[in-house]
Amino acid sequence: MNMQLKGWILLAGMVLLVLMSGCSGKHKLVSGAPDWVNRGSGAFKDGESRQFYGVGVVTGVPSRTLARQTADQRARADIARQFDTFVSNLFRDYLASTNTNMGDKTVEEQHVEQTIKNLTNVSVRGARVIEYWKEPDSDTIYALARLDLEGVKATLEQMERMDERMKGYVRDNAARAFDRLNQEGR
Image (cartoon, rainbow, N blue to C red; front, side, top):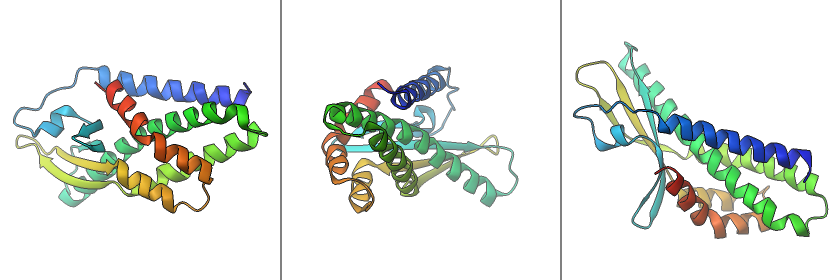
């Protein structure tokens, strides 16, 4: 295993640990808040639908417009962190499954690295803020953003610079990778 692949595996593991430690701390429940405020962000399955949810929070910003925009961006950034973990894990699995058939692993890893960045940037732009809540006793504003896994797969199909073999792997394995992330979040 070359050093770059080891570095990616180490980085993915560290990101996962940071995300898990961020989620494992005591979350202060907000009385009277919608369920999504107290549940927080994550990858959730709702029936057959698979969604990434991000929660952005801002307090102390006097301008309501600026506060909402800030909460929006934080909610999208929250999704980006989860989605980056999802895509990294998915492509790490892809590399492992195709490793024996590759001629030049370094070129393939560089291609995968660039694809991860492109897919994350394009997909997170597809995240939509779907709800807000203002805490009545403070100036804290919460924003809930959602990114649908089916939308991510549709975005993937439109990416011209992604290898067809890689697209097929993601299409075939995205739901399984999502479900694994969903289980880890519980």
